[in-house]
Length: 100
Image 1: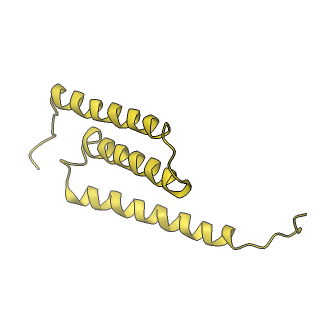
Image 2 (image 1 turned 45 degrees about the horizontal axis):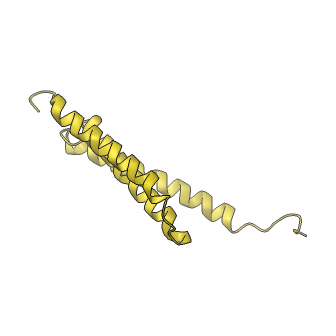
């Protein structure tokens, strides 16, 4: 790799505008009635898209080595695995005191 990538201010303003638009879209989605499981899926989808934009362009992972991208994806998979194991433990517990 020859050096660090330097983004132009025009590009950063475009990315910032895209993030602002996606934030507005997140708020605008709450103005419409979306059935129960889909409202969370839409919100998490928009939040994931915003996170990928921030990670890719503001944190320069897009122009970084593929090894660093692989480390990031591996850390996300490992985090999901830990959350999944925790949910397996907590979702299938029996209550020690029965509810009334």
